[in-house]
Image (cartoon, rainbow, N blue to C red; front, side, top):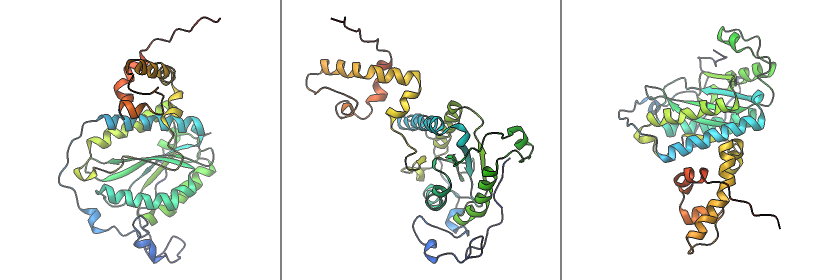
Length: 294
């Protein structure tokens, strides 16, 4: 389904137009232009470990869902695309996959998409691929026939989307990426937020020992928004924001050894996990009674 990049790789010494590639692009830590897979990328990891969703993972999934929903509501669903990137060879090393992605993101993604959020995922065999929510520069959803695409009928795709497919085909192999798929968003903002957020749990379940210390989610510049900006999107978040001052007041009255609290200094006195430890309590607080007008 969708347009995919050519399976055959171009000459690593030239780009699709036949021009010589710069030698320096082969050795930079995050910039690679050769399509030849290094032998170490084909080494299959031998030891896996299962990892339950920790508080930190739940936090990452929640923040991811908030940021995805904020992106959808800020830029509009018509401008959003779901991009899947794979390698033409099996890559098992998360750090190496991240290095290759950094090269492609720095030299390609930022020129063709205004914002993106990326989640890494492992196949059942341990190999790595990427899922991205990207913001396109024009409407790619209006008039798009999702049922037709399932039947390999791409005639409903907008000229801009077809152009982007062509750009992906011509360029991804320069950064050692192979098959790709870019499609408009079919669901709602809340739906795509839940859909992308589920990859956190899938990634955690398939993490390797060597994955420790690597990010599960990457954000382009300005695509990650603060919690305070994202939380205003739901009723529960509005209640949180409304009850937080009352909670700060209660804690200050109970503990005379600390200064008045607000959202800027509360973590300093209650710890970095205060929001998760006190979340249910804060949401269940009754409204503070209003004083009579004199």
